[in-house]
Amino acid sequence: MNIHIISFTIPYPANYGGVIDIFYKIKSLYKAGIKIHLHCFLYDRQQQPELEKYCSSVNYYPRPIRKKDFFSALPFIVKSRSDSELLNHLEQDNYPILIEGLHSSFFINELLKNPRNIIIRTHNIEHEYYRELAKSEGKITNKIFYYSESFKLKKYQRILKSDIKIAAISPNDYLYFKNINEKTQYIPAFHPYNTIQIKPGKGNYILYHGNLSVNENILAAKYIMNNISPEIDFPFIISGLNPDKSIVKLAGKLRNVEIIPNPDDGKLSELIQDAHINLLITFQDTGIKLKLINALYNGRYCVANTMMVDNTGLENLCHIANNPKDIGLKINELLKKPFNEEDIQNREQTLLKNVNNEHNTQKLINLLQ
Image 1: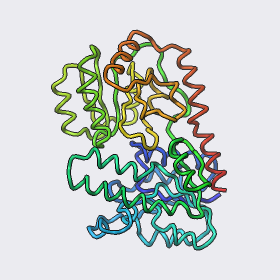
Image 2: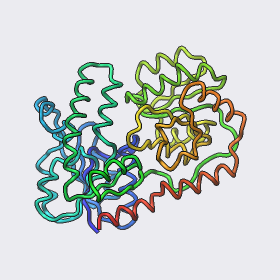
Image 3: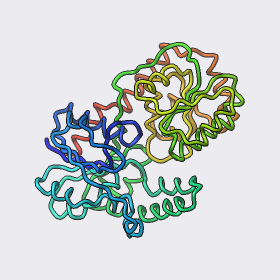
Image 4: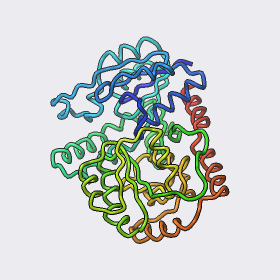
């Protein structure tokens, strides 16, 4: 089978949520014998020869940032991904098309003029995601932009009622999109892990990791440093991409917090494996948090709030607490306990059932056919 995949960005290196799902989906489809024609937008990343190992063709398109597009009736994330050369390539054949996110769907109406199998992979309920970004944003111009995008995206999602299929990334998203389009299926996030890589015993610190330049994660890191780490007599490590200056400054005032910026994949896996507890806090319940899957496949105990795990099927693998006092009590309880072989076996059984790349690949192939 030949398929087109339209990616909202270049999905390599796979170092944050959305591109992790896309890159490992590409690898899994390639392994299953699918011939992939990848199309991606070039703006904040460079062309990647690595993608040519798994794709029969890779095409790049500019994503210009034009002021007039901010005032378009279409969401900016859609309007700015509208290079006509993409449509020219897609119209050369009738292969199925997998569109990654509403971001990449500008040409959907043109493509639907002829019968064609089109799937949109929803990475979030986008208007809710942008509304939450607006709430947590301090800069007024950014806040206005996020609220504007949220309004436009809510209106724009009517395209999902057309003759397409939807592959939702989380159970919550599935329930939402199923009400819009009956041809919605739940296909969990693709990820780098095929086996459990958990070390038994005790770890040396408590870890929080994420993209530390994103507001959602900045808030979570500050919440941990302001409310949790001062009350726990144990080392904390906060690690991730491009730590915001405010995080670094706050950590410098605390005796038991270390910032490790920009770990590569190997270093991040090492950090997760050597932690005694992976602390998983979020204040946005949209999409699926790839850091949750990462921590569960590689780390010992996971302490999470409800927004991180609710309706994921992974709740029983985490210790859930929702305020600083309860989180602190749970951490102090777990610090006394080694992670044993029985814990590892229980983790493996649940993960291989619920977030398994091979199962996901077959579901997606069935949808594409």
